[in-house]
Image 1 (cartoon, rainbow, N blue to C red):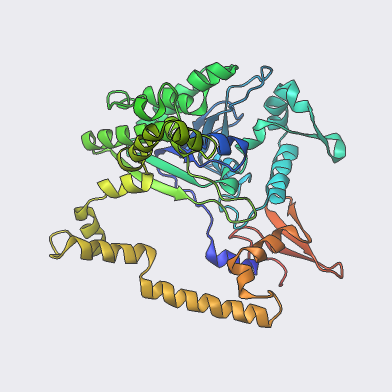
Image 2: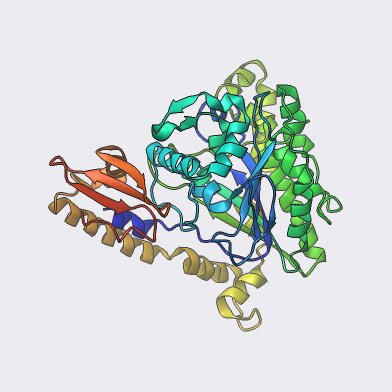
Length: 441
């Protein structure tokens, strides 16, 4: 059945164009998300690589993976040595060293195995970064005398395994903006800014991204700054992403060498709870389940005004913003090759474009019927109990959590090892490249 999952979900493929990505990560379910639902922000540089996780350089043909994600560590430990890290994009998104194809399914046990594998195989990372903080020594014992430390450093591994990610791409045909950003970040102090007050007001992940982008030519001039009405004196991931998007659009209007695109990297399906869309700082006051009932009870007028403002006036959404500047003329060119060759309604053009990208209603109906037939065949073969097992996610949970373990081979490629009641082992691939190379069944 993992082959079936392979058909439904595709991995993330890298594109080696010169571009900067402003990443907005959704909130991971848990205490922090329940209280603030703020998410996380980072920078993705497509033609940049790293040798030591602490500095960046242009990629060469010898590098197996192009692209890095640079982000602030957000450490609350006063003993931490580094303020920000740079991770290869495949490691940051999927906890893989060289495999850019990504995982098809995930679970906490799979992610943990991948992090353990990276930690044990990379002495440079283990000595230079992780063991730089004495607090990391508080971990569990592993074989061969290694220790697997606990702590925030694990947040740098497998982001897409736990949350959906939106990327605002600033595509620069000259490549100068990426080089400027590399020079800027390499020049940043990497001493930690510890302290709760300092972290919230000056040293959080979003403020770090904002400070980096401000030094790239054109951003500050385009009005890139603080979102006072939505964030107040803080800088939120959602706020800095909106400001970066608006500034990038203004730069695009002035320069033919720059254009803006948007990409959604959906959360990898599995047994992790679905991530939550991030809020502005002040928006969380009116939408957070712990806070809004109190505000609504004591200040109902304030509550209603706040809800109205963030829904109809300040309802920033990457998808909606993208639709606003995706023009009718561009749609006509995409569908018909030339805007002048087609004379028709805007609705008809956009419908054809939508059907071409996302599938028409009749296409989806046909696929649903095919899928249901596959489930009936799987039930007849005894693979599943009922089709509802698949529809409600029970099959995926059984595949990942019952009688299965993750294993990483000598090439760093992950496999799912399943054991039958008779003790027979069968392995299934966990990426697009390996899903059809495992043992049958």
